[in-house]
Amino acid sequence: MAEISKTDIPNLRHLRAFCTVAGTRSVSRAAERIHLSQPAITQAIDKLEARLGAPLFEQGADGMTTTPAGRLFCVRAERALEFLHAGAREVAKAAGRGRSAPDLDRLITVAQLRALIAVFGAGNFSLAARAVGLSQPSIHRAAKDLERLIGAPLFESRGQRIELTRPAEFLAQQAKLAFVEIEHGYVEVAELLGGDSGRVVIGAMPLARSHILPEAIDRLTRDRPSVHVRVVDGPYDDLLYGLRHGEIDLLIGALREPAPIDDVEQIALFDDPLAIVARVGHPLFAYKMISEADLMAFPWVISPPGAPTRSYFDSMFSKAAREKLPGLIETSSLVMMRGALLRSDRLTLISTNQIMTEQALGLLAPLPVATPGSARRIGLTIRRDWRPTATHDALLASIRAACP
Image (cartoon, rainbow, N blue to C red; front, top):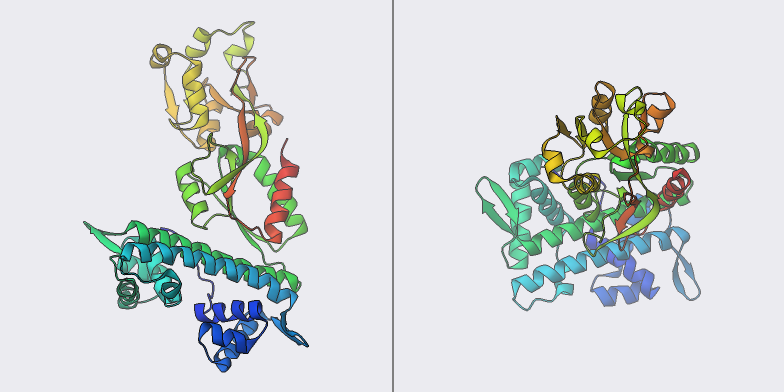
């Protein structure tokens, strides 16, 4: 189930009032533009300042100007509203009732968006209610109120599961990204005030988990000891989903060529060749020359189909030879792979960066076998419109420093 943000997301009307005052430099002009009373706008700003623990404006001769905290938070708030506007535009188009997106995204509430996100992740109103800590009737009511507001179906029953329509999925994704922007705004203001409460979520593919990421995180936490780091592993498609929905800040590992979708960007860090690896003392280390037949005479442990390493393995050996292997274990688990190598005469295809510790301990070693054209481009995958916090920037610098 997708993670539901527990961050205190402000009233969207308050957020819009703050951004409008920042843009017009006047409460009265903002009140005219967004059709709220001046006291309501003043109250909205007071509530945001109380939540952030910092003044957002200062009064000058030429009007209200944003403070440093106000400027930081305004960037995040405007980005959040842009995400919501894009989501509202999509569902407005699907509704086909002529309602303008600007009108619609001014009417949607945080409670309705939380309900939509929760149902999207859970596929069930009861499980969605549990995810956000509300009663099932409350979640159901908020979700159905949103559906009535939009004037088009948002939910489809698929047996025991409730799925969102495609426009509703897009709105849920945009809402999640908007909430992430607000969370980052809170963090940036806290850092400005001297705090160190940043949080980073890293999607780690196999190569990065062994050496690069542990070293990078160690570098980061030496300088920022209070940073909360979460490392997520799993199939690439799941990590990519988490990245695109704001649940993961960045991915690190083997890049895909071409990029899997146009709303992400890939940043190359280094090229990493593969090696055929075995336990120290494996019979093949005694051979002067190692042929394909010699390699195929032993069982292997290899990544499952779809992984870049597996693609190279399949291209390295003929299908007939692979079908005659005396044994094959398919796994994406490095722990399982290392255990299989150390306990048997199995071989694997892997980056030497992933066995640095085992090499240093004299447990595993690469065989003297050429692997031409095996170099994979290792790097970062980020959302194309991602705006990193200072903590993210520090993490990126630590990752670069840890790369070979």
